[in-house]
Image (cartoon, rainbow, N blue to C red):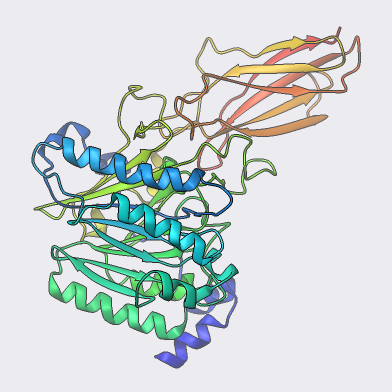
Length: 453
């Protein structure tokens, strides 16, 4: 077994998939809309276990922004717990790596000071390493400043939490770790096969949650092989800085995966233009509160520290104040999983309202600013392609730009704008705006024709 895993780890990911026949496309293809929970039943959910989780805190000695946000995480999480009618305990706070920006002892000292000043006695603090800690002190610094061992299996109130730290490469896990993980997962399932098992490592499993096609662990395949044997696994990962209110931040393919968010800056998948870090990416401070009830149902609530409130659903066809909540009612039966690739089949294309219009303003210097409203999308208005044509009859644009919708901001902008420059005076142009879904599918465009003054 060990020799086979080592052989797999040495192969390119694409070759591994070809040789093993492994696919990251879920086997379980159910009608998504029949599986989504009815949020009106949330009042029936009474937690018996609760933790907060994030990653990519990036505590730094040169910038105290992340330290302040990390402190706020404790304050906001405890305020939520204190306000709960029945269960007021925060049982654990988890960090899934890149806890410090470079791994300096001084950074760990700041991290530990914040924890000591804010954590309550009933809350356990559980961490693993990321890749940034290897910039200086690596494993030695983590063990010196945090706790042993590097890989963790902790049981809190009967719930198993298993975490892996990366090897010195920062994006890989060894065959020895994979074997250890397999053994610990078997122990956890034997303890209670009906309970969820919570796992974490810094890098995503490739081609699962949002931004995992761009940022992922090099051990994706062997980790997936082990996790997929246990449908009750909830795997949390970071590294990508992907926004946690993206609908694809939760993904089920035989088990459940989630991105953890970040306290530093946002980064997107490589599917909108050539810019994965938008100009407003610094407006990011995110974590999740995860709860389990006596029926072993799991509820995940993404939290926005910038607004200091829970995220609202990014679907702008919903009520504006509808909270974003993900819930898994049967953690042991993948046939009942709702957050699979089936969502793509049941989600409609983004569409502009019938009265939506493109407006164009000019400054008289060969520049035209195109402004348009958000399209409607039942999951999330993700982005737009803005195409400029030399005339209404030409098929090939002379200029084109793709932009994000700003769904990761709250409130999401009602309108968006982009400016084309270097236009010819007296010439007539046509501009088309095409909405793009989170599945990288295109809706019908709206357009406008204008002459440059």
